[in-house]
Length: 286
Image (cartoon, rainbow, N blue to C red; front, side):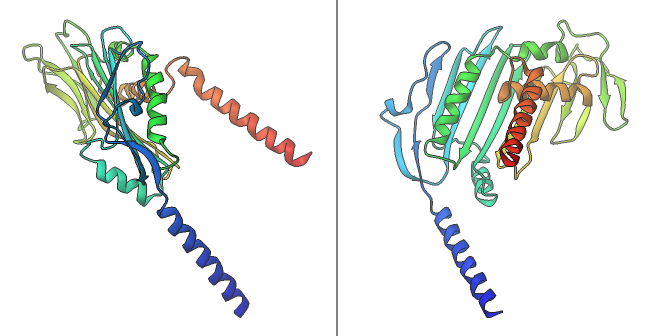
């Protein structure tokens, strides 16, 4: 009995010591950078080439933000990125999530689309603790992705927008669970869906737009989730649950998923996982 207590005490001491070391780990991260803007087809500009950037060796959470701006049927007109303070109103809350759940990565993706102007902004806020310059590494990956895809509005257009607007518009109404005809006022009736206010109904608006926000973490302590959504559209029942699911899938792909051959992406991943498992089993038994 005494021996067991001694062993447990030793393990507790080792665990406590390991936690103290882990909590004191510091990273090398670029910070205090200005916004760097790169036009389409121009190469990535290393933050180290900007005199304002600071190479800090005492950072506990590397942070960065990247924004891709699209207009018309083109690849992005430009991509902005910065490292250090992001400036998001929930920045402190996101840092707390990193610490509370011992996360290696916490990334918030936002997709904003204006149908009438054919503009899209994809914004990714990156927080990470996995390695030196991990935020810069993720920005470089997203820079390549955003440069190699066109404006997502054109994949979404058939789901949300018609011009001229319809004379009769039907929208899903959450309160009744049915599709109802809107009262047209100056051709400005739209269907809306708002996650924050739990609304799906007709409304009188002049804008046709989408706002989707996702959070992706690693490890998956905080499950992948849609954290905010606002959709205003003028096609019949474009705000019902099935249509919203399609909008979410498309915007998610353009924010961080696979756009090209995206229908095969899941099967490819499953095939890789199955091959890996077979390899491990063969190694174990033979």
